[in-house]
Length: 103
Image 1 (cartoon, rainbow, N blue to C red):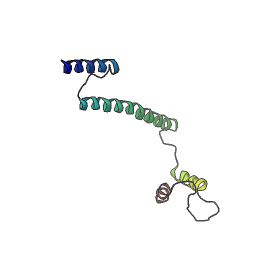
Image 2: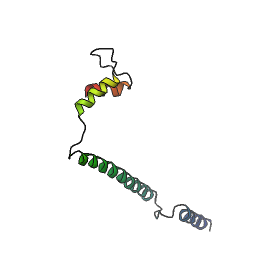
Image 3: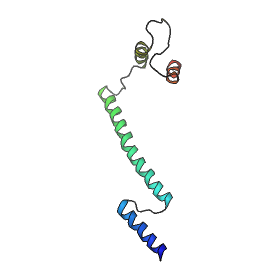
Image 4: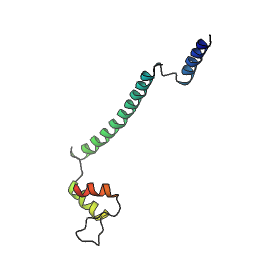
């Protein structure tokens, strides 16, 4: 009789603590979580896409970033202005600095 009581207590706990989860198999519960995270991520990525689209639309359909000018501005801001021709970036970790220089 104890296994039946344990099963009943477990099912009551699920109904009380997770009323929106109807699965009891671990893999199904995991998939429910994955699906919920995917839905939440879709809302986030859709919001980002919409924001970029609005930015493009506001600029006549073009993304308004001049990459060459951005790179020059980054060098001015992040590089040592006293070292002519030196691309040592003062404020960034070495891994990020090397990627920017390669770009």
